[in-house]
Length: 217
Image 1 (cartoon, rainbow, N blue to C red):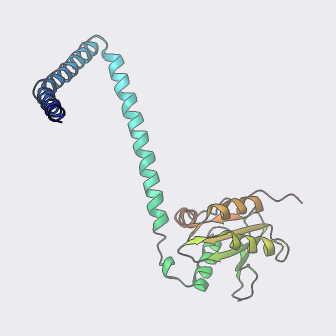
Image 2: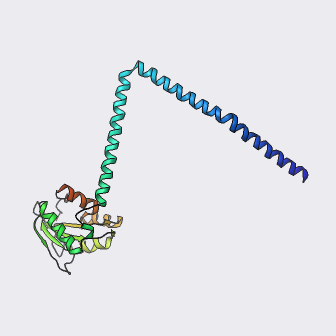
Image 3: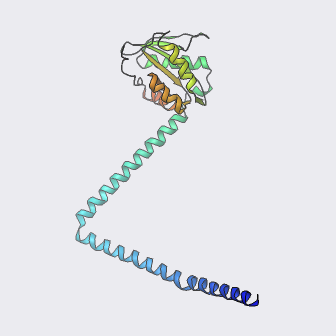
């Protein structure tokens, strides 16, 4: 037992000595090596610049152009996210019927004709009917939601828009965002989704949203 305890103490003493050596000797040496490497790299860069000024200048211009492009893309993405969060015009405070009237006015301003708000409780998914700029019949369902719009809403709209309302273009306009399953279903059913970011872009651009190609009969 005594020998075992003594061996353990000796191992601890050796470990402390090794740590002390690393802390006092190796760490400064590592920093010295790193500083020397950085200094040598800067010196070689200076020599290369003196020998090849044009290549270095073109490289600097290319790096600046790439950095500027990345900054521009990041700025556009941040701006789009901010626009998606802030629709403006008090839209988030509107009631359902007020939102329907707002969307109808937006459609009139951006080239849709014969825009009518049904204003009926049993409208079977057709809150707004209109004629698209190319003349096709448009049926719009509006959802003034703050959360997510699920696939059941898309299923109900798909079940009435084409067969009952004889839509040639079906749109789902919402202040919320669709779930992944709802988006997949809308794509399969040919329904144009105008979610919160797309609605903000529609408002700011004052241009009609891109509509799908005519359905094959």
